[in-house]
Length: 436
Image (tube, rainbow, N blue to C red; front, side, top):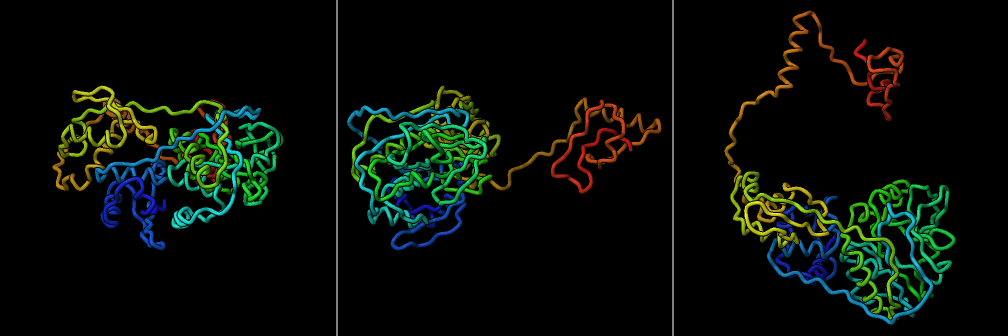
């Protein structure tokens, strides 16, 4: 994740670059490099797959806010427009692939070059400017981590959008002007005639925004990670959008990002928002409830952290205490932290914010002799008894060749399971007998 410090400073007051990168590194966001781009400074952060919330500038700003105890400033996204009666509609046939889909229509847009500040910010993080509408969708994605897509409304056939499974062998021409053959395991956004986008991966060439576009439809949706990942891999068509959807962006950002993009388009490209938004499905925004025993933090880390400090850390990270008081507390995880589901996850959050450097290196470790379980003792007795009676223990490989398929097995006549690819050359079947 390439982060512009000029951009980041809009959301939180920043310390010196070296101090910032060192603290981010210690908290789990590995710092790869720092370079100057014009008057801006950009840093490259390695974001682990369980932290999709940090694939946007607001997510990184949230981390900085917690680590340096500085206020976070997230822009409000609010739009208004006249109620317009029209027959356009949105439907979802593949709810397992797309739980929620929303679209907002803007009429009378003037597509043209983006203002200098927007071009500079995008170029600083390695994104080329296309036009003001496309640039805004990219900007909002890099801001909050929620991918968006813009359709030229006049290029859509019919008056409806349908989220469905692709038909086997169906063809699709992407924005890169390459044709792809789809399978029924892929999810597409379709008009009344054909696919206009591969859900979560890439839009189509026929409906892309051009200088002739006047009416724009902004898509924001929640796509299931697995179908997006499978489609991107099968088609060799990875994109910044698929990279984020594969990891699961914040469900709460779906609506915010849509409103934010419309707000910026109205400001930079003109037009009128035709209310209301088109929506289908229901947003999957489930939040984990986690019990934390406060004393468990000290047991795991070997260092005492006051209970009040633990609460401050978790609350600053967005966790909400459900049942205050006592040693055992219950916390509701924020929508952007779907990786936190267990008590040990909260312990880790407390540790990384407090600082791993606070954990002493010379923690005394008491050696405790291993005690065998009753089951292990019984196995040991049986094994020794068999050896005393003249039996030999067989230490065999788990996989065998095809010629051993004919040997009888005490486990029945079920064919052996075949490994693909073979674990060992010439041995691709799981053993069904100790012979030979």
